[in-house]
Amino acid sequence: MDFEKDFDLEISDFGFNKIYSLVWDHEYGGSIACLPVIDEGVVYFGCDNYFLYALDIETGKEIWKFKSGGCAGNYHPVVVDNIVFFGSYDGYLYAINKKTKKLEWKFKTGDKLVSGIAHEKGKIVFGSRDFYVYCLDMNGNELWRFRTGEKIVSIPSIKEGKVYIGSYDGCLYCLDFETGKEIWRFRTGGSIGSIAPMNIKDDKIFFGSWDFNMYCLNRHSGKEIWRFRCGRGAMTCGETDGNVLYFGAKDGFHAIDISNGKELWVKKLGYNTHSSHTCVYNDKIYVGGGEDTYKRGILVCFDRQGNILWKFVTDGPCWLGPQIKEGKLVTGSWNCYLYNLDPETGKLIWKFKTGGGPSKEKVTDHSEIGLVTIITGKGVTNDDQETSISRDYSHIPEVDIVDNVYISKSEYSSGSDAYKIKNDYN
Image (cartoon, rainbow, N blue to C red; front, side, top):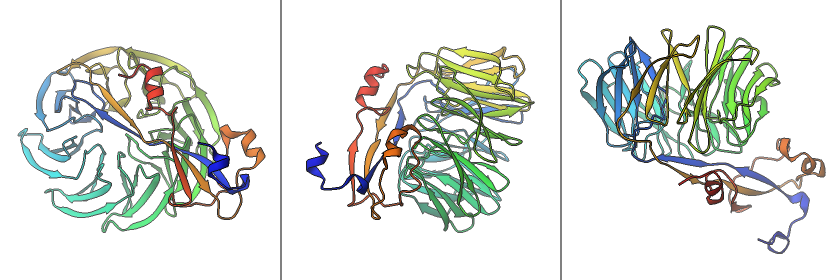
């Protein structure tokens, strides 16, 4: 592409912005790529071999399993009273009675269901790759649905009559819990997808985007309070502890002052922690990660100052990280094992192997470079070009990606052919 010939624009008339939008599909296998949930002495988790498992938390012995019609291992199940809810690649939301082990009902969406689930006051909310946010009653009857501009692979949060959920269209949505009507939306420069619920503390909501930023908004108005620039972006909302936000990104694991967005410390681990759930438990911080080559994974325990207290290394990524409840720590790995560790020492208590070998992952790259025409004539300045790694686009007005935007596929983004060859993707 010869921009000088193809575009009759002055340099002040446009700006470049990278839009990251990667889609992961897991092919059949025994890998665990979801966050487990612990309830009344039982740990529940989905697997790429189509099964939802229920194990005894003390012994690791299988109590029962239920087979869906597709990979069931992207987001954690949710237990409400006697019902376990989980989504599958077959597009269904399943409701399983945890006492009888039988299917109560299932609800069909228009695409793969890889979003997490939130519940409150006898209702459940979740998203689908069919672009919709759904709200059902406990009998599986649809109460409302809301259409976003792209796939939904995020876990919603419900707070004081509002639903907060991100979409691959780059927007964080605030919806009315009763009606599904939009209250506000906040637009980022990249896809939003999170394996943990939206992180809310008091009047603030925290979430990451593939535009390289972790955001803090006023959850009532949707106004930005601060943003923190991190490497490659984050598929997590982190966890707060007092006045600190902890979260993983491609450039390391960060501790941020939530009052101003300033970094307190960062640790480079040699593993990607950008998609891991973060746990704060007994003054310790826990996070998981994995290598791009899928050869090894890690679970790390920090103190509040960022000192590593222990590490647990597996021979497969622990992308989704740990879950801690009732004094128990569990984490799944791409190597087909679920691990139960001592949260104080990191010592292995038991491990459970699922059926089948490691899954294969197909990464579809929809990342693009948007050439955004600036209506006001305010474009990228020379100063911006000198500091591109921390460039601030706040001075660029928001425009829709329509006639005034040229989209070019990025050759070098994660998931592209060049990236797969370099990082040994099959």
